Image 1 (spheres, rainbow, N blue to C red):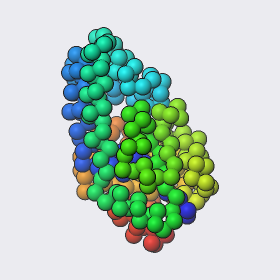
Image 2: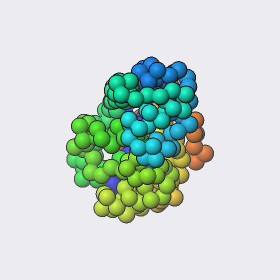
Image 3: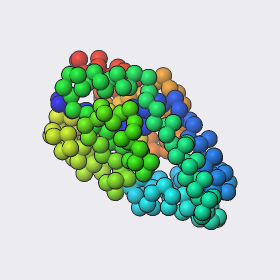
Image 4: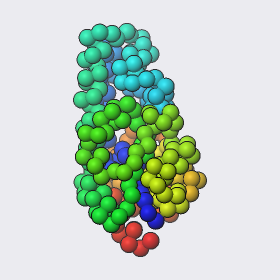
Length: 230
């Protein structure tokens, strides 16, 4: 094994703040002038469209969400909504306890590291300014690629950008979007991070996986133990 591909949200990021998504969405909804529940529903039902770039960037997405909520957002109102959305998004990128140390240790042992994430424009555009960026060798973001997990080409792209074969990769994630099944089908070794210490981590997940990998760790910081026994 020469490389590890990580999911981002809930895997490298702090699972404890996932529950804050709804509150952040409510602030954006207020800036747009729409009802929070209607906005939340519009965002949830447009997930695939948003994270694969079909609706464009943040500004055009929020304008479309307002339209789907029966409102029109332009000018200063839309500017305020974009600002609110970014302000609510960035805290969700906060590293989980120990995550950066895990990445540094793996790099110190010569491991190639990648991130494969279903995400919107915000992470793509803000990635270079994160604490993760200097520690990651390759990224594959759904918004840039026009596809979401478990699309086989995303895993193949991650391996190619890391300069390894899929069979030389582990894929580490907290589940959802059938990501582990996709990794297995692509020839990678899937590892589930259960986030056992974060009971509310999957509160907004509506796509539970049917395939559960045989390799599991309760926390990302337990990955070294699994690697030592591999």
